Image (cartoon, rainbow, N blue to C red; front, side):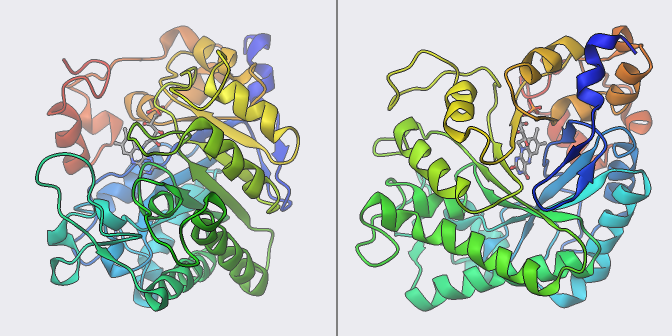
Length: 374
Ligand SMILES: Cc1cc2nc3c(=O)[nH]c(=O)nc-3n(C[C@H](O)[C@H](O)[C@H](O)COP(=O)(O)O)c2cc1C
């Protein structure tokens, strides 16, 4: 290995006590490949296995915690005990290759396609649709339903423990239900779940508390609890960088194992709400200090892209698309073969790359989404 990359291969012990062998994480990526009943397919289990012997930790695709939170065709389910064997197949495939397995737990809220949820009824913090023509208006959740969804996040955490995962990542990013409660765009409530910024934090923090409570009750070994958030929203009103810093302060007090900043571009700059010309990740790292480890992500492809990002001070780098394009990324860096890393998807290599058909079709029919697909 070229010695400059050695810091990426140092082990790290999370606050919970779980040790990971290196600093490279597979980012959560939906693969559209599960069965309609929420069970996983052999193709997706093989896809995870193919990508789990280099990285320190794999965060799975998101799994819905309750039926009306299913956000994608072919999403796997975590909402019923009968799905524990299916959840276990993924955990086992990842762990057998030597990586830690973290289940991403999720509710899609107003972003769920109506055809995927019971009675076609989508729900959210308030009856405010996603911006854009013809987007369905969600039904505002009742107080009791909100309590029930918080409980469901805990129940899926229990299933993750029973299925053998090393941890869960709470999906508070990318505009889904947890973010919908924090956002002044989607949360117009005037009860205990909305109004002031503190009240908009109530639901995200209640989910964190519930997940922690369940982990303390059920996990027999150290268990990772991470939280993923998106730093800003483009809409007005919408989450600003200043509001994100309030969220970070609240999360940093929760003794989490990590915060995962969801970004398309690692070095992207704030749109508004920060009197600062630095990259979002730099502002976030300064605010977090040494309170909780941070995972950074976004359009990192080469070994030097990752090293430069790592030198910003984040203890972990996640990669998504690049690990689909080149599942041997970590091994190549480790063996001094970083020049052989592939950074554009080769359309003739689906079998070698072990990518299930639905994900492959989504990739090759989405120009601009993956390098190599024009
Ligand atoms: C195919 C695909 C599916 C994704 N699904 C999820 C998901 O389930 N949960 C999530 O938090 N982010 C999801 N993302 C976002 C990625 O985790 C990541 O933040 C983003 O792709 C930027 O990182 P990258 O440039 O390394 O791919 C997905 C991205 C891709 C490409």
